[in-house]
Image 1 (spheres, one colour):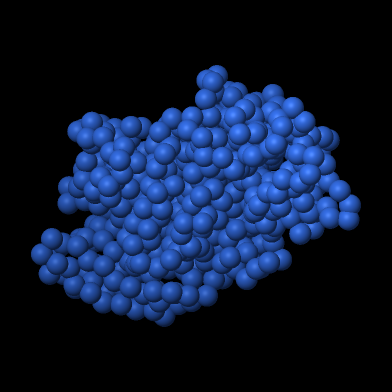
Image 2 (cartoon, rainbow, N blue to C red):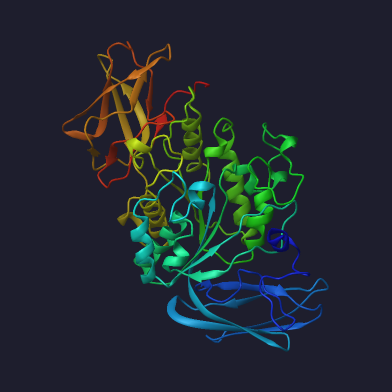
Length: 477
């Protein structure tokens, strides 16, 4: 019954209700963070024809009128970020005052279970250092968190269920780990308030997170995946979670997006990169048309018990996105899985994933620039030398490599396409390239690195960023 109430239109029910005629969406409320130094949207509903006045404690004002449908929206200018607690008063003749508001940076985090996974972890899915993270969260009340309740819709919804809360042990324990840690790391670096909206749902494919009409052009479009019932989780249905958990957020002014999804697209990943690009473009469009930053996480190595390369193929698609659309960045994770948890699709090391997401944002959006290395070496070219040795060159290996033990994970194949493990060397004076050999192969033609469902990386650049998995062949699997 509660889920039904949350899904009902705002005209009958409202998450935020007062004795006045004004109704506000869940996102516009006490404790929220508003994006600094820009025009932000304030919106809601009231009696048709009502005059709505808005006054912020920092001096910004706005006035608008509701339409025939009772909807209203206005923009107010925000100042630069600070630790000052603010208020906003909204009135249609009777005033509603929102309290404990902060001005800072706002990010939306979304995806499937690895973004949804709470700091306290889940069954057979522990989060490393969870107790420490929970205890220390009391130090960061300027990190504000909004968790969107999972719900799917056949049509775009007006509102979601949730509320803004200050970071605290009781709140952080049940909030998405990577989303919270990303916000915490930004706050620690920038010393300003950070608002994080987490809208995620485990077990969902990417098609659930953007409109079905944008997916009809893909050859794998399946009309059987068109949703037919409200409230489904969207695991294998088009657009359900977009309608219920993304569209209702689009008026809220954001800095950018973080995304962690892909496991559920294993086995059907041929068009994943194109779909992710389509989703990014659409999200940017509905949030005002700006080229907002979009940072995402590569799915981690995982043994799936199958003799296939489904996980590797998803990672390949994810890496392609970096070259297909501007202002995006990928976090590589092949070094963040312990040997004893290779079976687990939810690896325990959430802190370094969030840290690498934060590095992208700090480098690209907050002035740190090249002082931070945001991605590890990527394959550039190969050259077959005399004696069947392959010389591999990389983009981003200018300072050489860090190695933990033997360099493993590289394979080479000849014309027959049969891959065999390669011996890897570094040769002075050029430590920025690698030399591969396996004399059983004959003349090498193809190279792969960590191109398996579960191949843990132990090779980094000088700044600790892992080498990105790749292959030079295009064999079908």
